[in-house]
Amino acid sequence: MKTATDTLSPPAPVVRTVADKPGSADVVANLANFPQLESMAKGATGSLNHLLDVSVGITAELGRATMSISDIMKISVGSVVGLNRTVSEPVELLVQGVPFARGEVVVIDDRFAIRIREIVDPAQQGK
Image (cartoon, rainbow, N blue to C red; front, side, top):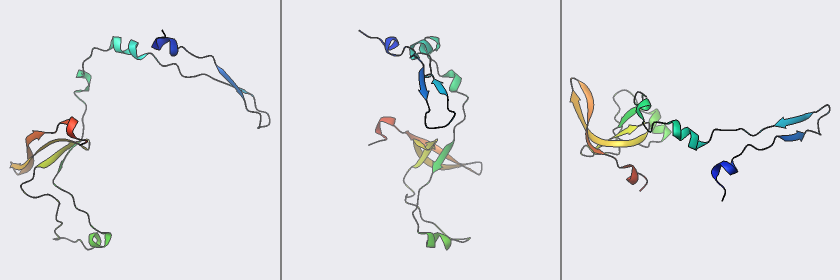
């Protein structure tokens, strides 16, 4: 029975000659030799702690609208653009553009905030 290491042994160099160009020489090309995933996994601690300080973008989406370019060109100070979401519908919280949670808009010390009411189940996102 073949194992993963048997099938991934480094291949012999491939020699190619470029004959259609004057003065061309043989080119030696080697396939890249990457460490086996198994050996990388042995050194890993299985922890994601090293990722905890990574910053990601979070966006609160109140709603969306679709408008023609001519209607967009008519927008001026004081114009109102209606969104596709009612006041009672929850606001979506996106992490790197991916839905993460839903909640309601609140005001804390003259700043908008989102009170989380539901965490989105990743298994249900494609349905």
